[in-house]
Length: 229
Image (cartoon, rainbow, N blue to C red):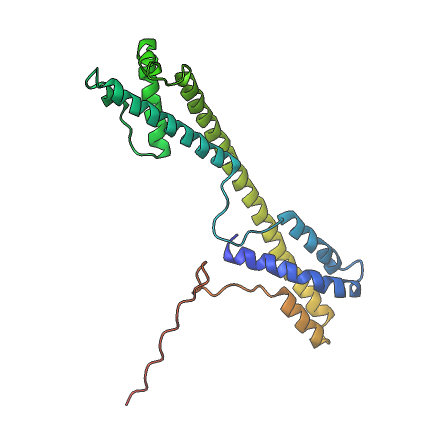
């Protein structure tokens, strides 16, 4: 949520106890009556709100990282074995050298190495040094799984985007509802300043100071200039 969206959400929460105490003062035909009833439903539909920075990785993202780690470990075994093979076949290991341990690089390198290992005779050289007989099949399966998790991750991100838009729609509804309730409450309690003060406190949209960072550090105020002599 943005700073303002969170402030509106908090204001809706503040209205709930006010509604419990005063909603019965409004007739059933009042717009405020329905408005007060809608407020807790909006909060419920929005659900729990994470006020921290960022969000946890989706299950698909975590699974993809696990698969990448497995492929990287396999590539390390293959590269090490290729250097041993190169003792008898100078230069053999050149094609099995690894790049950076990044998602893109690992996937690209694994694909290139699998092309070389399509040759059964080449794969047999690695098996001769005790890599599992199915190491090519295993690496191929892991690479395919990474591709599948990538598609699932895209789906998770789209779901998150859709959820965010739904929440924003509810926040917009809540903001409009606060304005409507403000009109009704001020009209209803125009001669009861103590209730109006209670409402003002309950419904106030408190936004953080613009100078305050997400980490909670506030920029120091500029020093007051010394009076001219």
